[in-house]
Amino acid sequence: MPSRLIRAASLPAAILITAFAPAHASTGATPYGVEVCTLTGTSGQYSVRVRNTGSAPLARADVTGVKLDAGGQAQGNISVSLTDIPPGRYETAILARHGESAALVSIATYQSVNGVETRQQELFAGKVAHVSPGSALQYTLAPLAVRGWTVAYGGPNSPRLDAGSAVLLAYPARSGKKLDTRPEAGRTPTEVVPLAPCPAPRGK
Image (spheres, rainbow, N blue to C red):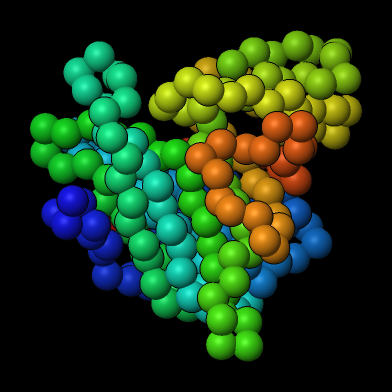
């Protein structure tokens, strides 16, 4: 639906406060690293902001969402492609406008490698469905908006996550593998980070 395939203009990174620190931040951002946060307007508008934290431009970031009805049930997919994101800048994908409802499903990032757009990272939006303190696998993760998958995650050095909180599951892309709508069964995410609302610009 053309009216949904919208992106906001790039803005200076200085007005964006980091929504979360990736687990690999201490070793330096990867060339395809991104930070993601969400924006919800007072009338129900819903957007996803993708910031390039790497050292190379992102050729593309494909944002997939799902439309929700009044009962929170999925009613159809939404796809927004953000292109040419320089390091330190961000683009915003608008998934829902006034009176609509939507939720994030996944994000795939691409770089240009030898002139070919190559998928670098796959991010899936989820929520913490269950917390098991002291367990070898502390967390059970489920989709943020729709049913269909669960992922066990955690260990002694895992970040603290609260039940019901929104998270992003990150996986490096594998060549030749078609991007799925859910994490691959049995594959452990390389990291799980909070999916937080975007903070207000400074001075507001």
